[in-house]
Image (cartoon, rainbow, N blue to C red; front, top):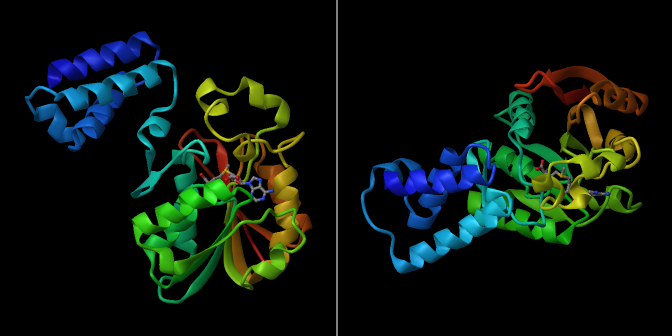
Length: 281
Ligand SMILES: C[S@@+](CC[C@H](N)C(=O)[O-])C[C@H]1O[C@@H](n2cnc3c(N)ncnc32)[C@H](O)[C@@H]1O
């Protein structure tokens, strides 16, 4: 199918899509229900039905709908997660938080983990899939996001390890609804300053929910509230791991230190941007 792959890649590159060949392989793999390696080697014509699906995908992609939102799934950490316009598409940078969490949690004991702003569930469910002894509580204000997270829990086979709480961290009754104290809190809250949303890439601002992006005037509104809610929920010695936006790491660490937690470390992403702040009670 090399000719077809080349043709798709050319069409995508003419529409200014980055990494057109990579996407062409992913699209054909989806259309043919074969692995990306298999489609590259396979030599056959597409059926009428497959051609129609392919044309529909290309039409949407040329209009710059993100490929994961078209195909309905995104790879994150070790797994594929269902995504839709109701959830933020998991980002590779967030995998750092998962790796750090796994290195801090004891593998031989039950652990209670809370995920504030669980979205697709990518962080929490990756952790639960890693160890059957770990239990999770996923909190999100969006019922539609939690619906996707539930489907992902079933896909990863971890439904028995998780409960979902459809509440916001500004809701006064949230602490009573959580089973606490907990060993770890993880969170990738909305952190884009409101005035920067318009300058985001079209594929982000038009397809990721605003609720998942908007961090208020200085981008830090949600951290301030999460700090207030988190400190009393954590066990002594428990950890909180936070994803942060560019230039926010120090300010976020200060917010959580003022709430009584102790800074442990800040971890940078592959682009050397301070991305994950870790604190301890
Ligand atoms: C940046 S997304 C993170 C999603 C997912 N954890 C990830 O890392 O891909 C933030 C999530 O926080 C949720 N959220 C926004 N405001 C909230 C609030 N006040 N209380 C609870 N959840 C909220 C959004 O619905 C969204 O799912």
